[in-house]
Image (cartoon, rainbow, N blue to C red; front, side, top):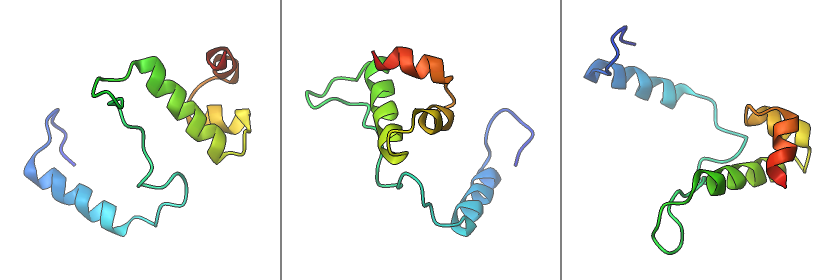
Length: 84
């Protein structure tokens, strides 16, 4: 990829090739995601999005907080605090 701070057209080809050759995703499916727009058409707050990510991680890891917090790059103590 480019050493520059901006992407160039050639960089996109490298990314596309890597995507095609990547193993099939077995963790949280690509079809699952967090919608940043609420049902009423407004942007969700960071806290709402974070809460959804935490809930998805907990569901994926069968409510194992250690694994969920690690997957989100969050300290377990922070995860507990944010759950309240």
